Each structure stands twice: as C-alpha cells, then as structure tokens.
Amino acid sequence: MAKQTVKERRTLVKFAVQRTTHIAGSGAATTWETIAVKIGEADDGSPIMTDCFYCEWLNAYGQAATQQQADGVIRPARLRLPFVKALYDALITKDVRIYLHGKRDDAHTFCLAGAADNYLEQCKMIELQVKKYEGK
Image (tube, rainbow, N blue to C red):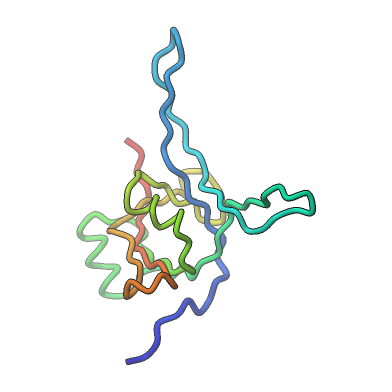
C-alpha cells in the first residue's frame, strides 16, 4: 500500500468557528473567529500564534465533479494538510468555515461537505471534502 502524504502544501487557507455572544439591549451577535494555533515562543516567552494553514487543495473534476454538482454540491474540493489537533477538534465538533487564500468574501468561503478524517488515525494528516458555502 502506498504511503499517503500531503504532497503540495501551497494553498493558504484559514478556518473560522462560529461565536455567538449576547449584547445587552441588542440580542445575540454572531461572528466568525479564525482558529489560531501556537507555533512557537518569542524571546520573552510569549506565544507566537498563526491562523494561516497551508494545504494541498484539489478541485474535483471529471465524472466525480459532475456527479457532485448533480447532487447540488458547488465547487467541490479535497483538502489535505498536516495534522493540527486544535483544528481537527474544531472540524469534528463545531460549525467551521474555510477561507480559500484567507479571503472572507463569498467567492472564497467554503464549508465541510463531509466529516474531516484523521487519516488512518495516525495524527499525521487531516483530509476533508469541502464545497462552496451558500449563505442562508
């Protein structure tokens, strides 16, 4: 069996989770907060954080894309990226939006088209299917 890896980590994506807060006199306000993870420490010991992730982004094409579009899935794609526990936990437990190239406009906003997979339960790679986000 060929070893599965993330081959081309060239596409920048950001992931955001929904946060709802109550504002006195106004009701609830919903925002989308990007997921940030610690990638190191500064000289003073403060954490260095990032919300930028690089992945292998493969748009669906051919018969698979045609079938998905017939099923109502718009702009399907598969993502693979190195395993990040905080990101994986959010993907399997929360409502998550994916921003292609980090852009938050309608053309670059995606959502999960299926469950995220901790490939072979090895905590080395996350694989997920996404589709174009259609606002409600």
